[in-house]
Length: 137
Ligand SMILES: [Zn+2]
Image 1 (spheres, rainbow, N blue to C red):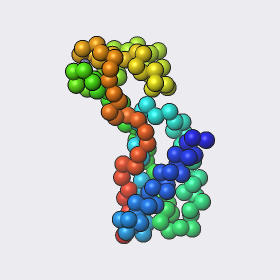
Image 2 (cartoon, rainbow, N blue to C red):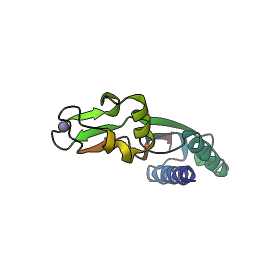
Image 3 (cartoon, protein in one colour):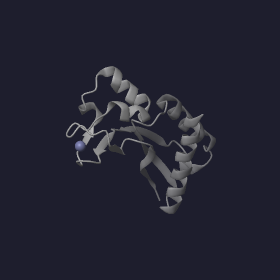
Image 4 (spheres, protein in one colour):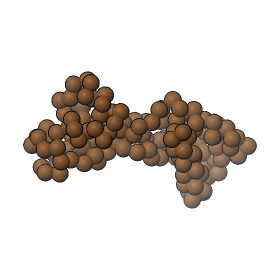
């Protein structure tokens, strides 16, 4: 149900942003999803489509196209400042999957490739955000 809550939040935010920007019709919404975000993309897309249908009489969201994009995860070492993609961290496939499906496990597997420190932060690749809204005023 987490996908539905996120989808509703995305649509609500898109409606709010377009009214701020004076749009009367939204043509396209691009949503970025961090690859560490635990979300079923198919359910998310379905939820978005269903929520848009509810707003169908509303000209604002009529025939809106929703694009989903995945944002790659980037880590940054707190010790030496090195930034890297977890695909470059030398994980084998099983470990890569574990990180993907449970980001909190990342600290168990991932080490800074430069100084080997496990002390790092996720600077990109988490959460869901609206990348862009295209429409007509
Ligand atoms: Zn480092």
